[in-house]
Image (cartoon, rainbow over all chains, first blue to last red; front, top):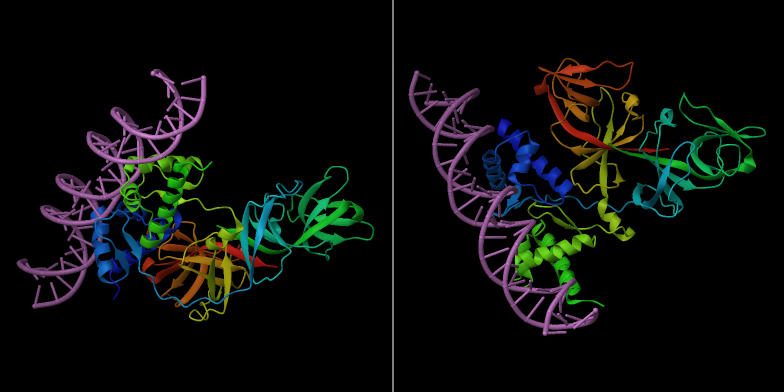
Amino acid sequence: MRSTGDRMRTRILEAISLLSDSTGRPPTNREIGDHLGGKSTGHIDYHLRILKEQGKIRHESKKSRGISIATSLEPEMLPLRSRRVPVMGTIAAGRPIEAMLDPDDYVTVPGVTEDNLFALRVRGKSMIEDLIDDGDIVVCRRQSTADNGDTVVALITSGPSEAGEATLKRFYKEPSRVRLEPRNLSMAPIFVNPEDLTIQGKVVTVIREM
Amino acid sequence: MRSTGDRMRTRILEAISLLSDSTGRPPTNREIGDHLGGKSTGHIDYHLRILKEQGKIRHESKKSRGISIATSLEPEMLPLRSRRVPVMGTIAAGRPIEAMLDPDDYVTVPGVTEDNLFALRVRGKSMIEDLIDDGDIVVCRRQSTADNGDTVVALITSGPSEAGEATLKRFYKEPSRVRLEPRNLSMAPIFVNPEDLTIQGKVVTVIREM
DNA sequence: CATGCAATAGAACGTCTGTCCCACAGCGTA
DNA sequence: TACGCTGTGGGACAGACGTTCTATTGCATG
């Protein structure tokens, strides 16, 4: 039978893990209590004592933040084919890529062995119907051509309004022009001459942190 | 020219790193001073202030053990900030998690340092309005409680039809019951007693390979 | 019903911790 | 010499922190 105290102790373990990860140091009794909705420090101390007896945590007496979760034996994870990829900046419909030369972050992309990848943080909702939201990160393979229906990062090199700008769009080749189509009902496709267009890459992965 | 203060600050940085690793938490000013041969707390505080101005450390004011070495932006450091996570199976509205004990794949999740993560491949379109599609991978933090509006992996332990099944839903606490809400106009929310429900985790990242 | 135990809140207390202040020494410079 | 800056020690102090104690509630069980 799982008692209410066991449930509380599970929540305390989760709080220790969460707070340790987010702050870089173990939490105090008060921080745990606050996180759990205003529990008293004595209450937390009571459960920490039991958790220590159960061997679930290490607890250094009288030291501030002297708790840590006992390391469980976890099977060594196998190496995985993955590549870290620079996040080169942000992209939006009708906006240039910013800071293209100075990656400000990296994401690790699973299951790829390719070197020619880069990532962009998406601004705006122009691709919302393809389930790409504002703030998402799109990982792209660097390539200069695209197939119909690919989601691409396209640089428009000349033209009436969008010159010099990079956009995230669906790519469709038409007989004498290229249609770049946003995926948002309130936005219209744009048409460009093939020679005014440089494909920079194609989206292969979407990552969203919630 | 490298001043004596710079040397002392280097020793302090090394002490922070060493003591953090050996104890699992950042040291106090006194612990640093003792480790360096009995320096005074004011002395350590003086150098910590300079190190913070130099951007070498983060320093959370007035918090005990509120120091941590600033994560360098060098690419070599960044793999430390990602975790490989087992994909435990698939999940769908009204279907149990399959192969929960036998991870069949791993994904590498950027920007997390937490151990208690797992991942599931989503089947079905029940969360399509939250931009979670069929085939996406959701990375979840293992936790037994949830806040209103969280997207959770919920196991329904008893009830008329969904018994023993795990679903991916939005979580809402109501006065005497819990509402688990899909994000698909064609699907209705389900209501369960809190005691019939086990929260398994909360979605923190969504990954889609195209 | 009485007893006992688990779970919880609240407060008190002593120690730990970060910060601040003062003093002083060494060193380069106006 | 006098001044200013850096590096160092020592101490005071307020607030943070862990621990302990008391009290209460609810729920088993005899």
